[in-house]
Image (tube, rainbow, N blue to C red; front, side, top):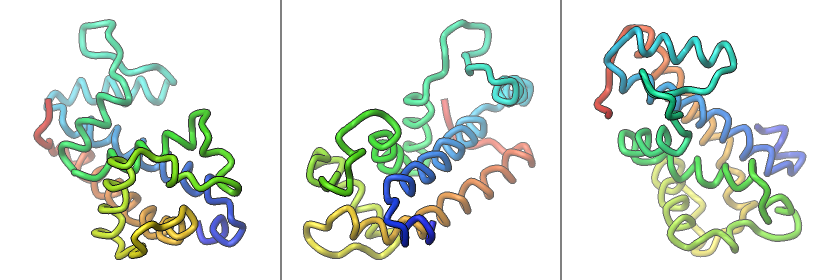
Length: 165
């Protein structure tokens, strides 16, 4: 992350964050399932490159569904997930070196994102920060997400369950 920051590859920083948040969201979803055989079925589906589906159904388990559950349990994953989606999917955010993505972000999403990064990482404190002001905090955000992922994986290995569906 520090190398990407120095190279001003801010969009790639967000993509890395999004990948880590995706992993965390999946692990949180697995933690919400009490049935260990169902957990194992979904893990095996991932390993074999298959989409997740609800037990005994053809209905797919969507990223949105998993992200909503994770956000209910953590209170912060949705803001990182939504922001990251804008960089992963085709959007105006791809030209972040010419146009500031925070300007075009809907106000509620922007306020939510800033509230979380200020609360958990201490900034940025400018009333109207630019994307570059936010990016200096991305290495800390990645550390936090990676730490939560590691802790959640340990809980999954130990067979714990969190409240979920």
